[in-house]
Image (tube, rainbow, N blue to C red; front, top):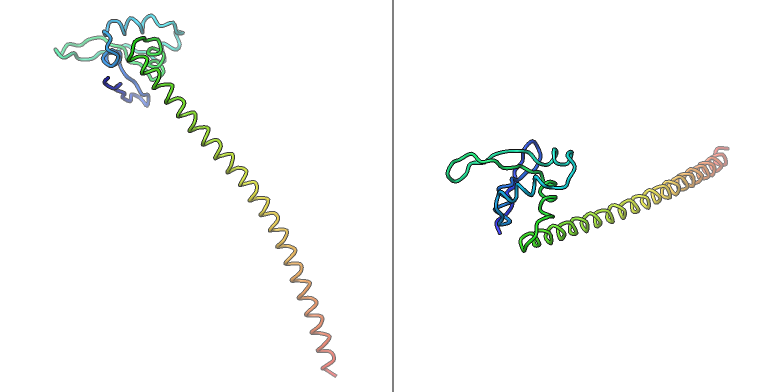
Length: 157
């Protein structure tokens, strides 16, 4: 099975009905007929399918349809046969892999948020402890200064 050729056009990934026909072993006429008979809204059709052309091996300009990734998926989910079944399985497998990856990322983000809250709480506790230490040092210094002044008074007479 050859691979779907994807190209970028105006920051949108696209492929052509000719490439889809080649990959799935279908006649190009059948693929364009399938696209034209898709039971999708006109808005979806306008966003995801556009008329285009390609040069044949005989250097003739022939009509084809360009489609976005969404249009491609919509079209190919309706295909039957071994290649279509393989595409659907691969699509589902990739979808599940991406979902697992997103779930893993989400769990890691949640863990980091919890750790961040714990660190903030520790910071507050350390700040409070620091204030207590500073107060104890100030009290200690005051007591030491008072003691020194008392001792010096006795030595001055």
